[in-house]
Length: 80
Image (tube, rainbow, N blue to C red; front, side, top):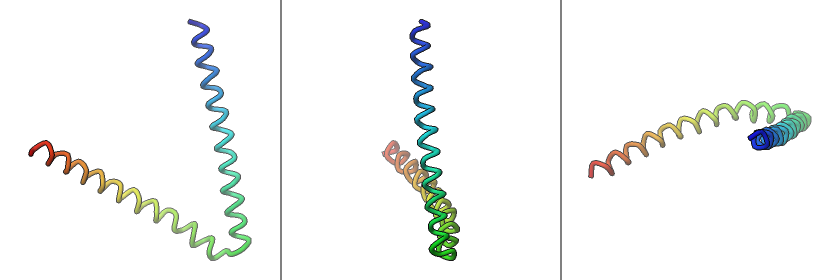
């Protein structure tokens, strides 16, 4: 039993370390990219950074409406 727990803990530790390293690498890539964009054009960078939340809101709202549509279609399929 202790061997199994030890193995599970080792697997979790490896997963967290890999995930953490990947997250740090992605963060550095994003920050470096934004810094490079600011270097080339401040105005375009600001437009891009402002458009990201707008796109996220549009994606989440369309996802919610699509889920409602799918639920309605599932209810209609059960009724028939």
